[in-house]
Amino acid sequence: MRTLFLAALMASAATAALAADLPTHKAPMAPAPAYAPPFTWGGLYVGINGGYAFGDASNTFFANPNGGVVGGTLGYNYQMSQFVFGVEGDFDYAFTRQSNNFAVGGVTGANTFKVNWITTERLRLGYAVDRALFYVTGGYAGVDTHATVADSLGNNFAQNNWRSGGALGAGIEYAFTNNISVKGEYLWLPMQDQTYWSGLPYQETNHLDISLFRVGLNYKF
Image (cartoon, rainbow, N blue to C red; front, side, top):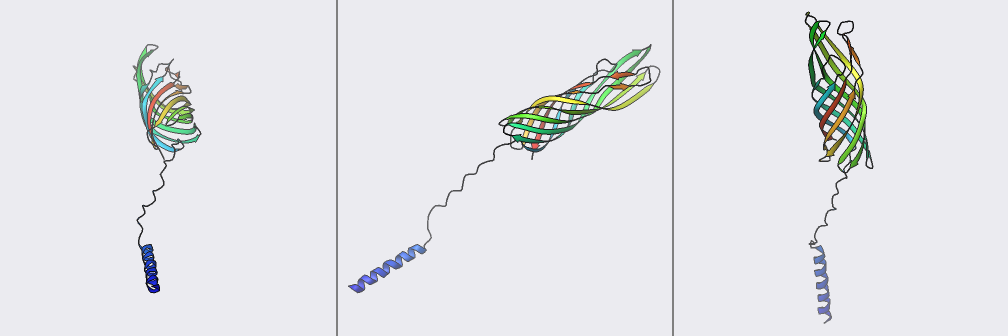
């Protein structure tokens, strides 16, 4: 009887040891849920822009130069809570030009006035509402102008000038993804006065303001 009991005990122990060596069938642990980082406007970005410029060359013989613009943008934002602080620069080619006829002292003629390039370097202050950014902006603006005049006496003159001024405006930008955003903005560019045709009968001091309406597409790194 004792022999049978010992045999049964040893068999039970062997079975338990064998069961311990068998692989388990427990389900694997579920991976920890992945959380997307919250959206932020902070960081470096580049973009393209385009729009239309309305020039005001009042009080001169020049007509108002109007036309389209297209160019590129580079900027950087820093976000603190819902406030966004940034710097932005852009360089646009302008298709703005206008011609005008005139008469001075019995001599008739025609002139053209063109804005070939527009650049701005500005600070931006914005308020973010989730993926929408409302901002005001201001800084430096510069434009490259080209003017010509031809009169009935056969004279032809041309003058190029780089003119500096200011830039003030506001806009709204919306981020469709964490990297891609679109914007619309208005900028007012008052330029310094410039004298054309110095020493000639057609000499005049030209005043120029530009109203710039643009849309843009930006990519944030």
